[in-house]
Amino acid sequence: MNNNTLDLGNTNSPNSLPHFVAKNIIKNFGGIKALNNLNFEVYRGEVMGLVGDNGAGKSTLMKAISGSQLCDSGTFMIDGEEVKISSPQDASKYGIQIVYQDLALCENLDIPANLFLGNEKKLFNYLRFIPNFLLPLDHLSMEESAIESMKNLKVSTIKSMQAKIGFLSGGQRQSIAIARAIKSDSSIVLLDEPTAALGVSQTKEVLDLVLRLKETNHAVVIISHNLNNVFEVCDRITVIRQGENVEVFDKLKSTPDQIVSAITRGT
Ligand SMILES: Nc1ncnc2c1ncn2[C@@H]1O[C@H](COP(=O)(O)OP(=O)(O)O)[C@@H](O)[C@H]1O
Ligand SMILES: [Mg+2]
Image (cartoon, rainbow, N blue to C red; front, side):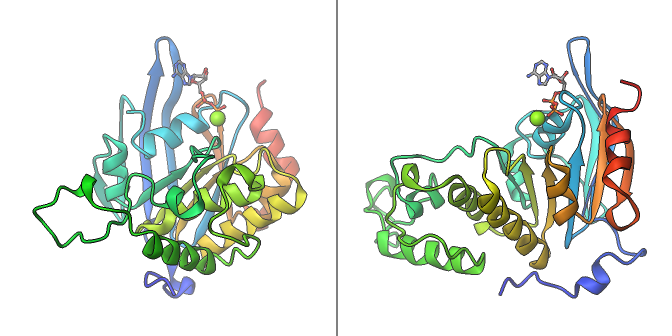
């Protein structure tokens, strides 16, 4: 079991701090105000939906949090402490992982190779005089880790770790991208439209995985156009419109109609 699993009963108490906060984030593209003083927060053990019309600034916010696109100004905080996120490496150091919609998996490689892409396990790595790139791959150890990751995520539909990614279903690919994002000691997982290209049963697999991340006390942010999905897995929903926060809704106290009207108000 993940050792950062805590008593979720305490995690979201009114006195506890959000795990991650973005404050007054501004990002302009020329004359376009993609993010205009945007505020955002997510607790551990919470799934936060991020919704808004096309062009509202959702992906720009995700990219800023994951360090792949710098914002012009604003502050990020983790557990109440300010952190500087200037690169994907910074984000990863702070336990922030993003799963992009296009997944960036290698179709011709098997599951362990994709999970360890760029971070491969090597045999004989105690032989310090041999440069790392010359060492042979430790296939067995990577396969064992891959099986362990899939087991932890309760992914049961993948029959063989040797399957090439190109032969897997969309839902299985999404599971592997999520497993890759969280195999390191991440605490914040960002998912940009993870179910957009999936059928009904594959969508369910991925939403189950999202709930699993919540159970293991991750702070989870999910962008989705599908309000049914959002209502199924999210605890709260942040609506952004033209780069500004419209409102944060508690799922249990709101209806899909209210969310739709917040998304489209003024358009
Ligand atoms: N790299 C970019 N260059 C110029 N404009 C961009 C770029 N990325 C996003 N934008 C603009 O910023 C706004 C927000 O885009 P985006 O964050 O992709 O919205 P969403 O993900 O909510 O659909 C849009 O007006 C979009 O055209
Ligand atoms: Mg987008």
